[in-house]
Image (tube, rainbow, N blue to C red):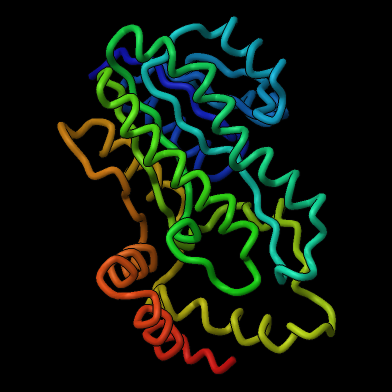
Length: 267
């Protein structure tokens, strides 16, 4: 068992909630946070805290209240989907404020103490969409690609000081992600046919298996944290492992051709 302290963002549902529960079961002192603190009042963790990662003031207040943590899990985020030409940029900026700048804000707040004490772990939850960009999710992928790049640079910077960086890349996971999704894929515009085709194709990646719950991601995070060593990037789920393995082994052109064939994407 361990007495390490872990702060997790976005704990109201899904991956964040499951991770807070799993970390607690392994003996971590968990500070579970959410923008709306009433959504996490029922969590059996060491501490719950209202936190809006979009706000400099909220993050500074959390740092002042919590102090040094050993593990920071940047999980808070939401999606915006639709074609690159049609999604309003105001929604894109709002999503980047949470998915990318929110994580960066938390890193700048909590990593200095980790660096000074010579230990700590930063876990950034990205997505299989941070490995490759599919149609009608370009802006969401862009936010996750950006967090992947930030994580890679952070790994090279803070590893020298004993701070570990872990990038978690879930595939399809059964969460309430869709409830917060800003979706511009509907209607009868020029991409309506593609939207219907893609909706039918994407389930193929899971091999017809049931979509796993967020507990799978929580286990991957905690197992990596408890391991003596781990790769920088950890894809989670059959679909994520398939996409990551294929993408890393061939050129983009070959990857695209393979995915078009596997998904029967005729567009």
